[in-house]
Image (cartoon, rainbow, N blue to C red; front, side, top):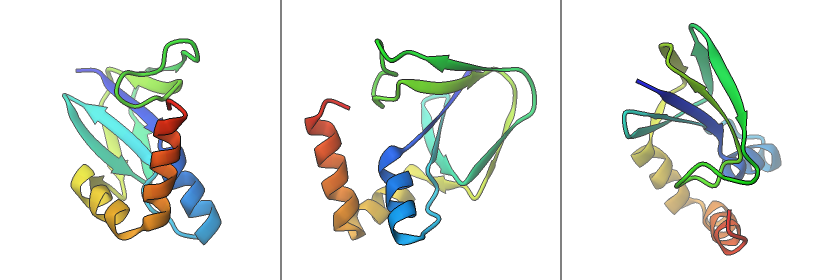
Length: 103
């Protein structure tokens, strides 16, 4: 099973601006998306740079891909993050701006 890990720029920027520590790492595994504060990759992995071909469905142009087991620290589900977004108008606005830029 392949695991892909990338960073949510929107959440990362929010954390920097407000001094928060919401999970900004996005882990996609077996079609399931989770968020984490830290990720431990227990074996070989690849850092992929595809600025000309973003990761489908995410807009990420750089990500880590591995077949090795991963350990998520400070894990949150996509539903938890969606609830955060709905409660934080600033994050909603940043997501809309990113979508309008085609990210």
